[in-house]
Every structure is written in structure tokens, then in C-alpha cells.
Amino acid sequence: MISTTDLLVAPCTRAAAKYAAQRWHYSGTLPNGKIACFGVWENGVFVGAIVFGRGANNHMSSPFALGQTECVELVRIALTEHAAPVTQMIAASLRQLRAACPGLRLIVSYADTAQGHHGGVYQAANWLYTGARGSSDAYYLVQGVKTHGRTLSNFARSRKRADETSLDYVRRTLDPDAYRMRNLPVKHRYILPLNKTTRRALRRMHQPYPKRIA
Image (cartoon, rainbow, N blue to C red; front, top):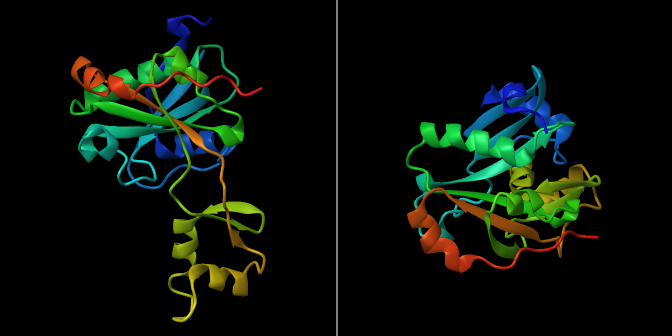
């Protein structure tokens, strides 16, 4: 294991986080909107970024009876080859995030089964597991690429005719075989309460951890 003196986790620029996401995260993207980015360096070499944000779900905090400013999502863990445990990197970024945002009470993250993930890194850090769920968002396959419904709408909004949908416009102008994706793989949701009061209140939501996918 790498020693703590060789590992540095510190705030980084959005450009640095985007570089990491494009090269070392399966999505190849960085979320839009306000995000908090932390770079990771080992022996002075940049090995990735850990990013927190509001995520795609505007009601993310609702199931936990928390306000929007009390809950954020760990939206990206984008790392190349590294020596330190990911749990150590996340813990270091969380200490700094909590210091900057003392009103935070909960971190949410998802493990995407479509990528073979089951959330082992969250289990190792004693996060609470609240079950698997399908996405409530709409996704479309356009020219072979999985595309969020919001992206599709933004692309077509000022271009499509009044009598056609965003999908109609994309089929007419870009990909005649584009379609809405159904039966998408589920994601495992994990939560990390940041104080004892919140953990006691949400402990009832905890379910047995899922096993690694063979």
C-alpha cells in the first residue's frame, strides 16, 4: 500500500477532472452544472479525479427527508492505475468537502451493473446499501450511442417542427433507427450519512450488500 505521504488528494480544476473522466471513466464525460472536483496524485503524478455534484436527479434528497443542500452525489471516480486504496482517496476528498460545506449530511452514489459494478468500494467503506433500481430517466440509442433524454431534447428543441417530437426530429435528420431504450440495467444505490444523527435515521433503509457479479 502506498504511504499517506505519497498520496495527495486536493481540489483541482474542472478541466483536470474532465481530462480524467474522458480518459479513465467509462462514461467519458463530466456532468454539467455545479460540481466539486478533487484531483488525486501519487508520487507527484496525476492519477485521476473524484467529483461530487447534484447528479441528474433533481429529487435525489427526497427519499431521505433532506433538503437539496444537505445531500450530494459522488458522480465520478475517474482513475488510472494507482497504488492507494480508492476508499482512502474518497475519505480524503470527503474530509475536504465537509470542511467546505458544513451543512452536508449525506452522500449518495450508484454502482452501474451495466459496467459489472456492484459497489465493492462502498461496501469496504461501510456505506449503507439501499437497493437496486432502474433509472427513471429516458435514454435513447442514437447512432449506436446511449443518449440521455435531456440531451436529445436540447439538441432538437430549437430545430424540430411544432408537430414532431425530439425523437421524430432525430430520426428525420440524424438516425432513422434511433429509439428509446427499454429494460435498462439497474444501478445499486449506496448512501453515506455524515453524522450519527443522520445515520441513525437512515439505518432502517440498509439492505444486505449485493455480491460481485461473476
